[in-house]
Length: 91
Image (cartoon, rainbow, N blue to C red; front, side, top):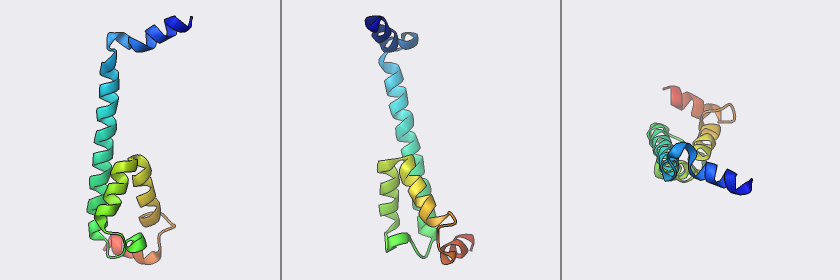
């Protein structure tokens, strides 16, 4: 039974390694889009948490993918962000 399951998962729909490549490229694309979003948004802000340069925030989003974007959003866009940050974003 274990061997049958391994064979099924390795040849899922007859595509084998293609699924791995597709998922890897999709994950990379999501990380890049998130990093670009974070960088462009961070450039618009006058005050960034910990006074980090926008490239640092973009790098965090690139390395940690959706977790990095979520961290940026949490510190700059959510209700946890200071009121000064919220008014700077809407200006």
